[in-house]
Image (tube, rainbow, N blue to C red; front, side, top):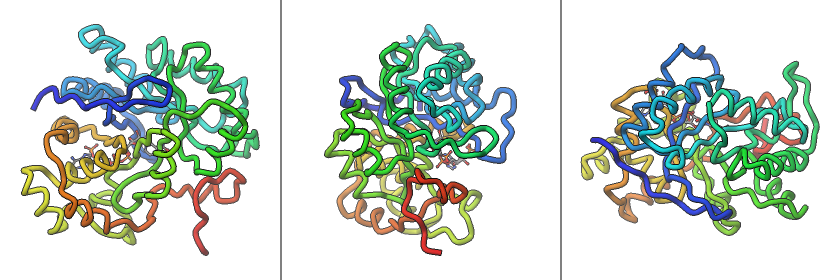
Length: 312
Ligand code: NDP
């Protein structure tokens, strides 16, 4: 294996972003151990990753910071792209820059490459909703960029209408939209919209329900042992997870595979030396089901709930 570098994509603000990132979310019910993410970040950089995706809400920014610190200056700061996110309890315009400063301190960085509003839904720590308009939050993000604390700014879990409203109000164009993107949730219209607006899409939960260990009982196929996918993987001497990452890359999406396992971290970036055929891509397309693994139904009654409301 060893040092496979992902190509870079151009952002609408002139900067560049590596086409694959390491995810660092441990899941809702996991208590982070002291150094598992720190190790994963180091292994990732050794394997060639140059983009780390994290968030204040993951409670492990300190570990990301320690992992990065161990790799600087062998790998220079300007060759690493760090993305982090503003949590829902800091949506007031004046709260954004202080929140980012907290993240920067944990990350041991002077700036992040990309700062995202994690969700359009505002909610204070006591779980009451903060109905601050996300346009105000976005103005705070623009302040952070102005100060040089974030080189690029973007959104996560926003829908087309919400992005249109930011643009119609004459505010800065988001550089990135991070949303759930996997075989069961391919979002072709949203991808088309972002392409037209020149917004780069980062795809979270790229494996969706591929693994038996993670899939809910009602989750649509495929699983990792799906014979059609296994056949495609064998053709390229790759694994089924690698095939799904490659598919997202060919859709123009930046996948964010998370792993704490050294061999899988190495495997997940080893997807830049082959190309799927049209026929293989149409097989992969056929698994699209508009099925979300992270619907956040607890926020369904919030006016800024971003997703199509399920029929109940
Ligand atoms: P993923 O789709 O990345 O799946 C992670 C799981 O897959 C882990 O259990 C991991 O196991 C396993 N895995 C990883 N690679 C392999 C492999 N090659 N073979 C077999 N198993 C594998 O899920 P996430 O939900 O974590 O999403 C990825 C990232 O996206 C997050 O970590 C986070 O950074 C971001 N995210 C952003 C959200 C947002 O709201 N903006 C929401 C959700 C995620 P193991 O670690 O044990 O190796």
